[in-house]
Image (tube, rainbow, N blue to C red; front, side, top):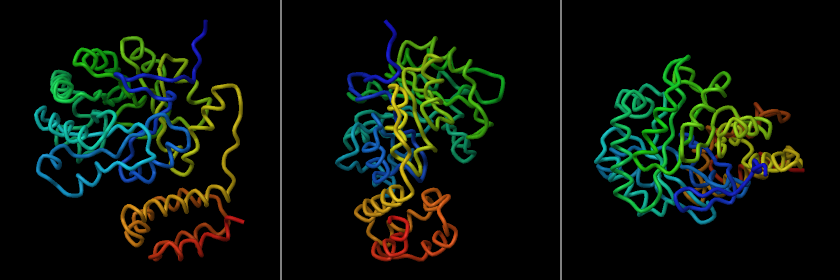
Length: 324
């Protein structure tokens, strides 16, 4: 019997309604956005990456990033660092915060993160990565997962080795970005490398990288991935998970209309305001307004006007023209 592409998934005892996850994105996947993604059909949502060192030293901003809200669904808190003891401490903080899982970032290609020995730099040090995962697994009761890339440079596939190391260390799942670190977020993913990694792993592998629709998700699932993690395609359309789910199930769900998209953006602003206060919540949304208004008539002018808004009422007055 053929296994359905869209299906519930269990990760270390945590039951997910489906195998579609919101990938972590710095500056984007805060609590407000995670609520929208969960409502849009994601079976799992992941926080922005949080510095384990900052947690160790009691950084207030980092601790605020651990705040989880009702309506997010199962949440994985992602942490990054290079010291096993510090990462174990961060895992305990994530568990106390109410995370369903704690995820290790071993794939971030940003130079600042790599200079600290964390992120994609851990792909160079499988023994250290294994030690980090093992220490974290032993320090918490919630499942520990890990995210890494197929390689550091084009033409190398470190995935199978890192998958075996992660599994042996006790990780419950892997998220595999199908591009090398040097490629950041551009270009095609390497499906062959992803298939080889999925075949080498005895734990679920979520494929990640460039998925925008059901066809993209299907390609990763047919390559052997147990699930799919979606990032950038969800930024202005958190309902993309429901669209992908419909497509994988043989149906079809149309993308949101312009009016629906703007109404969803206003909901995001309300959630942000509830977390950070109106003025700060609107300021934090400035990074995303271009994504949400892309393609709308007069979008450039509206985007420019948005940058000086301080209240939700002002935002509604600016954007109401698009909701009719």
